[in-house]
Length: 189
Image (cartoon, rainbow, N blue to C red; front, side):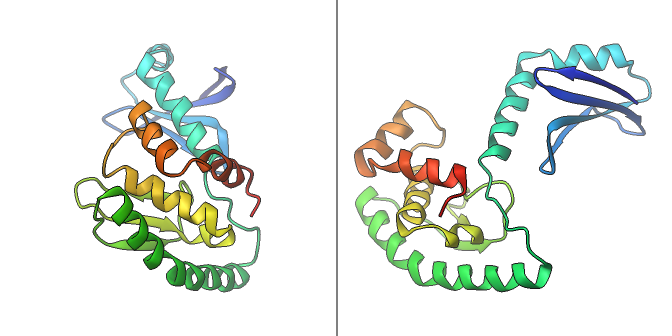
């Protein structure tokens, strides 16, 4: 195993019985990139691979995603399950009304809406199926924050990427989205 500093994080390269190079960042170690390489590859080749622009962009995007990810409470499994059940119930009461309201405003229809115990994001949207998933931990936040995530995911049915058009639609329809996003980033309900 080789370990070194790279772009403000630690890289651990391990040779394994793999066909392709694999890169991972674990939620519990967001400052460490784990790289698995085939035995036939040299450590120097792996280091050069890390300098490819697409790898640098991937690492930056993934670390940002982990930074913005839902903060799960530091509780016992039993306490966490109880809290998740309360949040799920709150979301089940709130979400149908919010989805009806915003589907009509935006002129879109989503498929199925699910509530999941997610670690990496507050919500996600499958463009192909139009299904939307919401993190159960979003239930700890204000209705405004829940509404922001609903609008954010529905806007993806109009614009798949996070580009100027996407944020323009958000600005037009939900102007206080930045405040809600900041609350979610800070983890302050």
